[in-house]
Image (cartoon, rainbow, N blue to C red):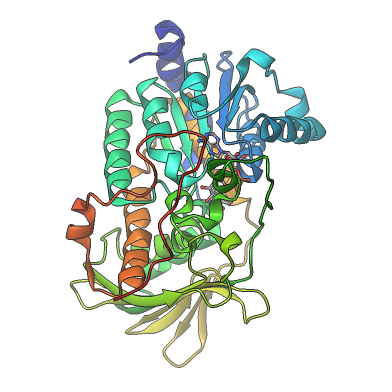
Length: 430
Ligand SMILES: NC(=O)c1ccc[n+]([C@@H]2O[C@H](COP(=O)([O-])OP(=O)(O)OC[C@H]3O[C@@H](n4cnc5c(N)ncnc54)[C@H](O)[C@@H]3O)[C@@H](O)[C@H]2O)c1
């Protein structure tokens, strides 16, 4: 394990902390109710946070992390581009909590393709990975090999080789006793967790079908600049290049697919087929992704998930999980269960903390207590499920889970370099 953190210090965090805080914090960590934010663990060691990917989510995640542990500070940041670091630091500086707990000198600000490797070479304890998903496998490996605890945004890869690489990294983290907490945030939402418990406990009987809707509007586009190379243009507008984002079925709809696989006891579907395309995103500025996907996933026991995602302006929007069981129905995001006659038999309407805060409370408590969390299994399955749907719609073929998992089809360049990288053509089924 290569890390600049002294072994004594890490050992201290893992062992002493367990003794000191186990009684006081474990209850709030493991409960479904609001955890105690900003608790002091009793461990004097400061946990140092490094951020890789200084965009919207990464900047927000730093604040969630600082809130989660009162004895933490952000000490290093990395981004492909210095201007993104500058915006992030400025934005953190406007936040009261972050401005007081940010200590990022110029020599701890890293840019370029190797910035994540440079960052994990510093003495940070926790690394937040919030770059475009294409970079996740290599950046996760760098963090794990350096012995860091990781908060890992979704999706974790854009292709099957990337998913297998992440599976290996998560196994390594587990063997090293370090945490990997996933940004699949609904797993940390009290209302969703309570609804899942009801369904898994049999309130709607056996699950027959799942419908996953992510019908929504459009996201940002960061424009064009003649000074940018083609590679820089794509990285700045990464959402629209499937080698960088995985396409929106992976980048966004993964939240829904993750709930489907969770409902199924984290057992993946065996086949998928579907159709999709781009009706509105016809100009080159939208890269090579689709604007809609409709996918049917089938499990061996006959359960099907009908998954719909669309990113178009001016259309009907709906983001919800609709579950039909033998004895009732559920809406997961609404946290509501009805019997087969349509009467509401259960509803979660308690006040709940932000899931974005809760996931970091779990991560930091796991470090303080020396009880690592590893979300690797489901974050890899949900990512592959999204890739499965994408490939089913791109090809028009039936895709089998096992064959896809073994696939060597790798998106993106072999070597990273600024210049004229040409992405694949827009996929045409058939
Ligand atoms: N869990 C959630 O609810 C949620 C919400 C939003 C975004 N996300 C995920 O977080 C990730 C980031 O999304 P975002 O909205 O913050 O995007 P963003 O574009 O605002 O931020 C990404 C940052 O990564 C930088 N970057 C690109 N390539 C890099 C590289 N090789 N090394 C280092 N930095 C690099 C970009 O310059 C940019 O600043 C994505 O995976 C996205 O799917 C999750």
